[in-house]
Every structure is written in structure tokens, then in C-alpha cells.
Image 1 (spheres, rainbow, N blue to C red):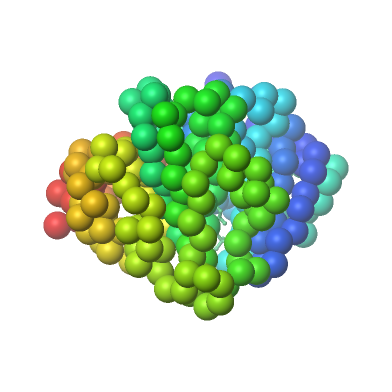
Image 2 (cartoon, rainbow, N blue to C red):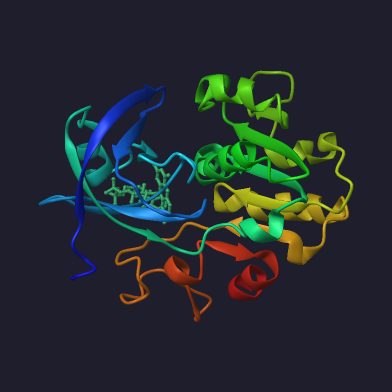
Length: 258
Ligand SMILES: Cc1cc2nc3c(=O)[nH]c(=O)nc-3n(C[C@H](O)[C@H](O)[C@H](O)COP(=O)(O)OP(=O)(O)OC[C@H]3O[C@@H](n4cnc5c(N)ncnc54)[C@H](O)[C@@H]3O)c2cc1C
């Protein structure tokens, strides 16, 4: 079978969020690991990579949440319940789920970086797989925060620290409040967000005693094929972000970018 052929699938639910964001529930059973992505394909328009933001334990569907930024995402934005999209994948490596079993885990999300991490968080809660879970989630302003209702539910299982650039109790960048999580230094850390956030977040995690090899970053690059063929997403001259990533151990990532 041609691996570039998208599979048609029906949108069974939709939810619009402020600031041009929309959550789509797609009817399809796929096996995936949190942190993996699919290529969404709109015939005659184009394709784009998007993180799966539901949990693997949710078997009959998967969810994606998109921000309208350009040509293809704007086209998809018009789609609603009952419409069909095409998808290929899942692609990429995903988070190190086995390694995290029974461990203390801290998650640091900036903006849309919460999307792949939501998949991990939900799975971790369903399976009660981590010893403890702390979530730091930073956005520009309160209305920008996704999945508000779920955050309240997650609080029963996880400690959540919300940070806003403007407004709220903790004002600033998410990296400014890592100390508030009272980390013990033995945690595994998952980080996803805008590239500018990586350096300050990693610096603070290291300061709290977390080891370099226990920090994982989910990285976005312009991708096309998703299968390590076209070379659009090569990083550091040797990593194909689509197959070697998008999740990188900090020790590998720092060699790729330096
Ligand atoms: C592994 C991976 C996971 C992603 N997950 C999500 C997700 O869960 N939700 C979501 O909304 N988006 C996600 N993205 C980004 C998404 O793929 C882009 O927003 C999309 O390709 C834009 O397509 P477009 O045709 O609408 O925009 P275009 O017309 O191609 O571009 C418009 C503008 O959007 C920005 N842009 C385009 N591509 C990217 C990119 N890869 N990274 C950052 N900015 C970009 C640029 O500023 C560009 O000028 C992910 C990207 C990757 C690589």
C-alpha cells in the first residue's frame, strides 16, 4: 500500500476555543504513543503535521486541536461534525512511556505545547502509571488556557501550576515558576512549547537538580513526508525530526543545535 495515501475519517465532534483554536474528534482507531503526530490531509489543499492530543486509552477516536495560522489550517477551520478529513500516521517516536512508569514526572507546557502533553497526562491518569505528576502550564492570558474543565479534573491526581504572561496569581513565563513546583531532583521532565522557552526551562530544571538525560523536549520543525524521506525537518545535520523525534532527550538535542 502507498504510505502517502491518506485514510479518510469522519469528524464526530468539534469544539471551538478562543483565539482561533478548534478541537476535532476523529473517528478512527489508531495505536499510538503520546507525543506522536499525524499528517492531516485535505485533498486539493495540502497537508500539515499535528500532535495527537487524546490518550491512547481512548480507543474509538483520536483528537487534534489546531490553531488557525495559514492556508491549510484555515481551510480545516471551516470543517465541522460530519465532515471527513484524511490522515496519515501516527508518526514520530513519542514520549518514553516505559521509562516513566512508577517515576516522579514533571511536565512543562507553553501555549500549544500542552497538546502532545495532554495525551501523556490523560494516559498517565487513566493508567495511574506515574508515582507523582506535576504540571506547569503557561499561556499568554487566562482565555488562552485550553481544556479548563479538564485541568480541574486533573488536579485530583496532579499538582498544577498555572502561569500567565498577563493576569492571574503567577505572572510571567512558565520558566519563572519552576521553583514553585518544589521538585526533588529525581523527576523525569517533559517539555513542550515555543523554541524560545527551551533554554530558560532547561536551565531551571537543571538548577533544581534534574539530570540532563532525564529531560525530554518535544520539538517542532517544518515537516512534509513524516517518514524521514524528504529531509525538510533535518536538525543538526543528522536528525530527522519526524522519525528521530519529535521527542528528543536534552543530551541529544543540545548537540543537534550547538
Ligand atoms: C510535530 C508537529 C506537531 C504539531 N502539532 C500541532 C498541533 O497540535 N496544533 C497546531 O495547531 N499546530 C501544530 N503544529 C504546527 C502546524 O503543523 C502548523 O501550524 C501548520 O503546518 C500550518 O499550516 P498552514 O498551511 O495553515 O500554514 P502555512 O500557510 O504553511 O504557514 C503560516 C504560518 O504558520 C506558521 N507555521 C507554519 N508551520 C509551522 C510549524 N511547523 N511550526 C510553527 N509555526 C508554523 C509560520 O509562522 C507560517 O508563516 C505541529 C507541527 C509539528 C511539526
